[in-house]
Amino acid sequence: MLPILPVYYAYAVLVLVLFGTIKPRTALLIAFIGGWLFLPMARFAPGLIPDTGKEGVVSFSILLSVLIFDTSRLYLFRPRWFDLPVFIYAVVAPLSSSIDNGLGLYDGFSEVYRDTAMWLIPYLMGRIYFQTPDDLRALTLAVFTGALIYVPLCLIEMKLAPILHSTVYGFTQHSMVQSLRYGGWRPMVFMQHGLMLAAWMALGVIAGYALWREGTLRRHMGVPALALLLVLFVVAVMSRSANAWFMLVVGFLAVWMMRTYSTRAVLICLVLLPPAYVTIRTLGLWSGQGFVEMLRSINADRAASMQFRFTIEDAVIARSLEKPFFGWGGWGDWIPDATAEGEEAKAFDGMWVIILGKRGLLGMTSLLAMLLLPAVLVLLRPKPNWHVKGHLPLFALATITTLYMVDSLPNAMANPIYMVCAGAVSTLATVTWPLPRPMTRPTHPQVAGSLSRERPVLASGPGGNV
Image 1: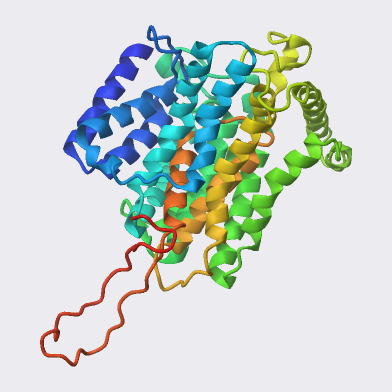
Image 2: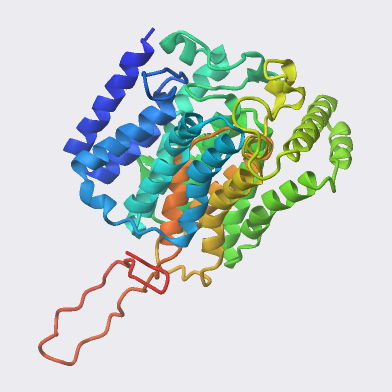
């Protein structure tokens, strides 16, 4: 068994070595994806700094490496209006909640520290490191590759049970009871929960499919890309998560319709779903009973589980609306009857309703905005020209971040890699993509022979800053 603290320290040193020896963009992708996939789900208190988990180790190790080895990259960042929701969610909302509840500045800055690690730094890295079609392809390919790396580990846990985390680090990160689903084991590997892993595998399929469908990925690691896609698809289905199955179907449909018919109808529906659900549930316009009854005709156990979720949601919403603007803070006062240690506290699964309780409408609306706005920016673009490579991966990553927000309605599985994608999409959706220069024979002798076919690059447009 590996000791936790030495593993974290070794990872921080490894990130420094990566940034000092290889291309910074590649180092960033390896550090983010590799760290999140393989570091333990453990927290520690390093002294004056608030307790830290692997999100803090990953994000601050990368930020320190960028400051040391690639400082000039930070100068590329120009704050834009669409960056505001992330700043509000990670800084303004937690500080406002702590101050409003009399918890003090230290409590507020502790919450800011954690949210900066999980949300703000990954978003910033996505904004500054992915600014060209080539960068976008590298990020999309990294998501696909990260999911492929997990394939053999998932197969091991499907056969033996989720044992890798306990074997390597000495403890199980979540209840084994929740890993038994649909007659078999749901793998967790080194992630927080089997639901998080299943979502990661499903979204990896969407990323790989976009590259394959665009025609820029035919072979990968010496294997036909289509074969890898099929294997990853099968493993994602075998991960035994209904949410992941939903992501697979809807994500595939969205990307396929974008490429085949140049329609973004599926993505539009996905963007509208979270605010619509949050609004009708918060205002009490929909109880969910009709959906529960529909589920009961299919699976009585799932219907009972969903009924329990709606009941708990109703209780948290009622408690949250007693302090609607800034919430109750992060110490359990938002939980009905203040039973922070009771069984009910363990049943609060939806990220949106947890944030509504902790940080009120300010936190909840900024959560919706920061995860949906990248897709909105893509939808505001003119219809794409498919002769320019990069459009389909852009739409795929926008779909991925939107599906992650949809998944955050019933679940609370924070994953900073999706914020890297959100930052990249926000940057690339607000610049002009010119077409390649036409191949015409020059008439002026001074420029004869000087023209060549160029790859499309990003140039500054009305909303650009590259």
